Length: 432
Image (cartoon, rainbow, N blue to C red):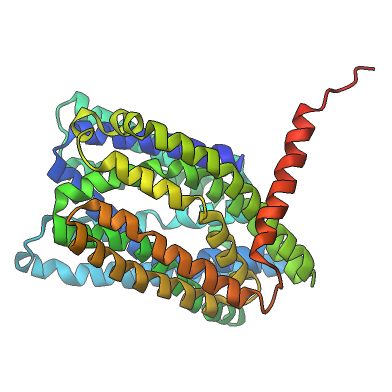
């Protein structure tokens, strides 16, 4: 169900991208991508502070403790939402001083959308912690499916422009949150069970996890900001296409992380460090080996994928080759991601924050240097290997102090797991 949920979301997201890229000019697409980048980055402060903390402190606990955690998460989520929305409102009187269109759209729409998405965001964290991926799938379909329906209606009634696009985005967020509140998925009634102790506990964990999550999103967003500044909005639109197609890697990776996180936390909380290492190596190794033939397929058919998603006007750009470069390095994403998640699970959020911050600094330097040397998007794509190497080796060095293992064991155990799984499917079943 986790894989299905992420798969459906990725398909809906790609349908959305395909429609928008055909319905809007390249410059407008660049501005929409910039707004989305800023929104996700700011939303990361709320998500990064609370999502991992909720899963860690809520999963597998007694009923009363679970209510305390959820109520405390609601309290902190409301506080963060009001602070960021208040900062947004403070910029409104100074709109005349800003000339950048993407920034103006952000000031106009961020606060309202951020408030509207609060109940549905908390509901999605709770559903993930409870492993109710069936309900999470329904929530995602309501949100993304409603947005696609709104976009199609705008096109049919010839009302498609950036302003109406932002209105549809706000309406779909309101719809998803109202449904979560009515169905009780957001557990808003738990707010009355919050405690100072639980709030403090979540805060002290979250102050590092939020830094990690923001840095991780900045790691992805930095490319967009640097490309926009050095190469323009058109280049942002081109670079976003292969980024969207990277969902072929992100879908199984996010799905596996969502299911493995609870298993890692449960094993560590029971003092089973060896099992923590086993889960890390099994999942990371299996996914890494699975991604190898996927990357080979992309090397052959990248042009077809870019044409299908973005349309013919992008076939003569750098998009296809950028996609090929990204996929080669993406094979090793599972190792980096699972090391990062495990650092949080073993109570090392500070080390994880340092890891991602180092990756961010290396990425920024690499992007600027790459564009300076190549003067095109290839420089940015090639630079992605640098932070990946830094993240894997630094994370391994720190994690190995708490969960001893060898990097080569990831590939060995992944091969064993993959071979065992394939044999199960290929073994003939005896009919009695």
